Length: 425
Image (cartoon, rainbow, N blue to C red; front, side):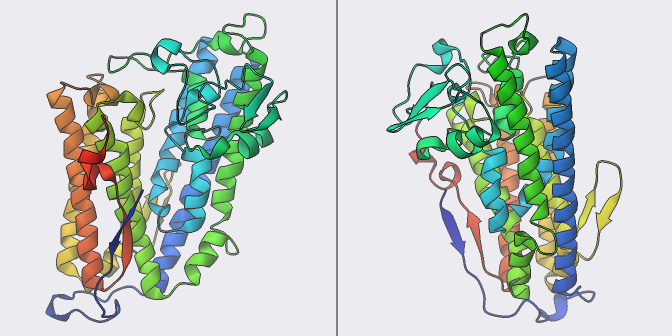
């Protein structure tokens, strides 16, 4: 994705902005300490939830029944909540963006991993020689000119050999969405009701369906363990000597504040409004929904927004109900740029309401997200477009605040928003 430069003003963020200024602003150093504390808590909770998911997968593999599969799927959905709330840290912090591809990359060409339905998936892709590699069924695979030994499915095989193999981003071999595919299988319902329906017997050693159940078990276990490893690494990066915290503390106060707003602006605009929502709406393609195998997309989008609000307001509620909070960006903005701060708070409230409407529509059973973006579904399309519009307005309000504070940021762009005519149908 391309970056949309937003270079602004020359005055210092610490300078009083005239008669509109209100209560004394917290020091940027204090705002940064809250930001770091939130990152530590959020990524720690994501890693903890991933460990719970790994345990649920172990229990499923020990006794692969419909009930234990259902429990593993529930653990996966639960694990998504704290992770998605971290995504507001991603774009402003290089260390997080570099690790993100291991845990949340999408969309994926699932034929790399396991069997697929040829009628809906197809036999080949001009862009990906490994489109139907099916490593679970094949003990050797060819990557370019190299014949790779895949006789043992290990964490190293997935992360070091298969993930983004051949330089193709769609070769996603690790992370939430690889696990999601292994738990649900393909969603063959198009824009009709229903998610993936992989049978528990795909993991049974004595009642195996669809072949290679032993290798499928190995893949699922390795992917679950890798997710824990990678999220632990993301959490550790926020320790006192971790790369993310050290990178942040080397920046000037203005650059630190800009880091916060870069993450929120880029997730609001290019990533969530653009690549995850508007693109699917333009194409009316269920393959473009974020959690496409499980029909969990509505929850993931909503959690992104809840996380952005938490980061801006400096207040995060952990899964156990405990609250992490401190001096925050919102307080700083209210003191330095009250008019712009009020507009951003209103925009965030509106975006939260619009994404909540998508979530409520799906949770009610009326229709899943992939049905909302279906061609000809005017009402569903409108609900999703309302979410897109609200996120764009939120990003614009962030830009206005940046300008008033005299900061400089780059907001992630998206052809889906900036040049929709270039998006092929």
